[in-house]
Amino acid sequence: MANFKKIEDRRGFSIIEIAVVVAIAGVALIGILSVVVYSLRAQVTVRQSMQAAQYAKDAIEAVKSYRGQTSWDINGIGTLAAGANYHPALATDNASSSWTMALGAETIGPFSRTIVFDRISRDPSSKNIESAYNAANDDPESRKMTVTLSWSEKNIQMTTYITNWLR
Image (cartoon, rainbow, N blue to C red; front, side):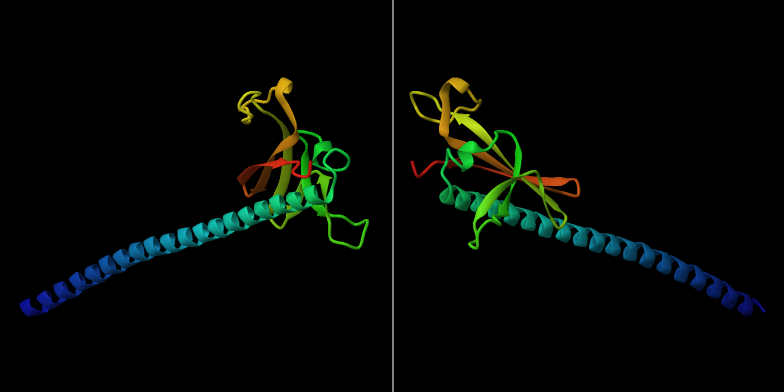
């Protein structure tokens, strides 16, 4: 009978071991799944950031094309309101593919895209762009352009300067 009791003790101990192994495996599996979920979220964020950057570059190229198809002070960038939101839109008044600047934000899938043109001023002696706009030194032939793409509480901005290169 004494031997029978030892076998029972071993069986009970084996069940405890199995329960501990299952618990450890469960914790490890939860950890691995957490890493996989984080990795997938990071991948989506990176893909969206790359898409947003491409949409911003596309907007800059559309503005450059618009600048080349218009007259700066008549129907071009020089006539756009400083600080207002614009977005590139294909012109519908002719058969060719030409760009125009439409007021407001543009929605592209999950993204909202805006372009803001700001006046700039240049130091009279060095001709460098001043960090803060000074109306006395206004450069009527240049604009600061900021493209902003926003989505899911994230955003990117690209800033460049556009000049009246045809003058």
